Length: 335
Image (spheres, rainbow, N blue to C red):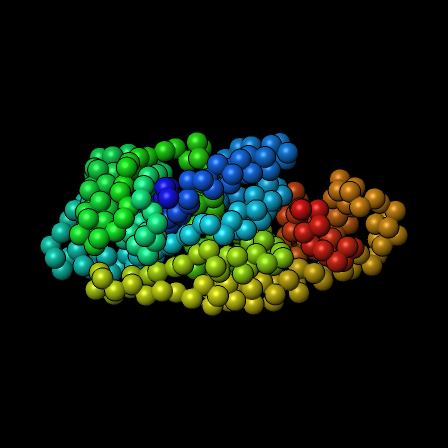
């Protein structure tokens, strides 16, 4: 069988952040066209075909992101490995060994992807051909990362007696690959959870990301799919060969507990609104989204705003809560 591996990173090695994150997806080639075609079909029906990028996510994007990720998580053929690097230990190691920051980057930009890639293929003896696609980076090209990974992966296969052969390692712009975009979004979600950014209630974007992730993971069997698809490893010691596997269920449980506490606060103004304007809501058709939004913006008190006004940025959050009260399904209008 022939496979493709995709690679991306988040929060590059930097002294200002404690961790940097790296993710890789493996997909059998025969499944790749089906998955990409389905994603394109979803986006075309929504008439929202622009690039998906987690850092740019806004509340108005929820239907687009929800439908695509809701499908992608059901793709059981996909394996997703994430590697978290402790930057403090990384720089300490460099100082101990006398390496410059540039030298360390050169070594780690090969070592980290190579470990992720080998981890995806080492237990599958049915893989014979392998193509590796990385998010395009001038830095990777300058450091010769593509060529070195090609050599390292094929060397692994040879001396460990594996069946695969790496045919190519190349960079691609994320806008040209929906799979790179899926990698970016899921890696972004995992980083958001690990960094506990959901505790930030001071920015609309963080609130909207929390709402999107909560609704995605709470829908149907998505939490199970999320756990089955993703493995997270962390390097937190001076021993480069020692990787600690993080329990993803513990990470998502902590997030869901925090969300449930916040949900209670968010729901209070929606319940008051629902009771006061029940008759008006009853007169609206199920699909009359625009009238509901207009009523919400005029009458609901927003707990995140000093003046209590609800602006466009958080409309989807409260529209979801209203859907839960009206139809017992918070995601009814997203599906």
